[in-house]
Image (cartoon, rainbow, N blue to C red; front, side, top):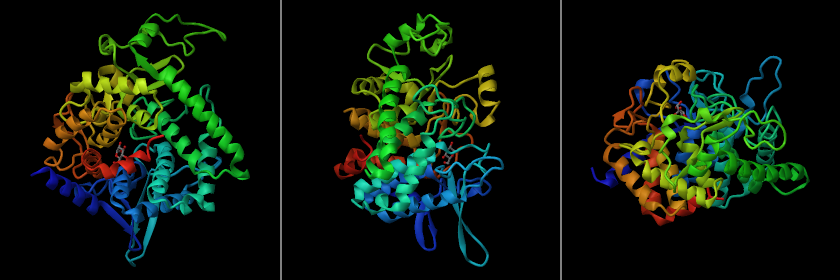
Length: 455
Ligand code: GLC
């Protein structure tokens, strides 16, 4: 097959993935793999739809994106209130399905984590939704949606929930485990990077979308402040390069009071062995998670790439991050772009961190598997930092296998050489990510859609 037929095959998959409600297209299923009847991959996941939506926006197919935004906004009302709890208005579902009954009528059913494996809370959904709403508005010029009362009310409710104080002691957002793309127990509770990057992108989007009127005045003030404090905090405390690693290596601990340097009481002894020599002088990254006595030094790809895209990192940090991909190419890109987390956890640590999860054994799935869906964000971050060369190399690696492997969901192994043991085939976001990467690299017209993600 030539590249063009690969793109055609990816587009055919996207087309087959579209789901309809009352004759109108409203979303895309996660995978068109018919052997998966018992799973929820035949639902439309909010996060999985994001790259589908970028393709539709690039192609001028605006209706499906608009319908999706509308439906997800409406589905909020399906959330069940738990006995003795206040309803978390502003939460958006992880996924939804169109159920056709025997009489031929169709209903939309949302999952707020109440049916999901492990009952995980979809904290990222509303953030993807707001970021997409801004892109849709900028690409189409259609401001009617975002300005309407329903949407303004929806955005206010989301911000009300996401800016509400819970038990935070820093500007970073506190979340339960498995509340975003890594939707299984994997040590991503607390203040995981991916959530912080999305939170930042969402706050900036909301700042643009909220009308500057009396209703929004206080909220807009809070959003502006949080954008600043979150940005400074991430750039300082999450950033790791050789200079910072040396500082942490020589940290004193048990510091009490206002003058503490090691404010989170990170024990230098917690620096993992693999980090010794891993960072070169011109590279760096944002660590995966940060909390009291806890710095998760693992490299989480999506959170880092989104931080570059949304401008959460400084320009210098963004360049150093792309240098890291270059110097650690075999580990982070390998035989299929890209590694989701580096490195994998093994042995006792795997038992404790994952709860002995057989799907997340070392170098598989969320525990160090390689995920083609990350290619779109990598391409975007590479273009933003002037490292198109890296994006082209990654795209070429994907081209050699991904279409032939029928758009596998993820790959196993240290270098990602094996199709994931329990990976779906015909995974929609593997194909859409490839289409986006191809468009960004080969079609200058597509860049205007991508620029709507840059702040
Ligand atoms: C898996 C992934 C999740 C994705 C879903 C549907 O659960 O971990 O991120 O949204 O599959 O593809």
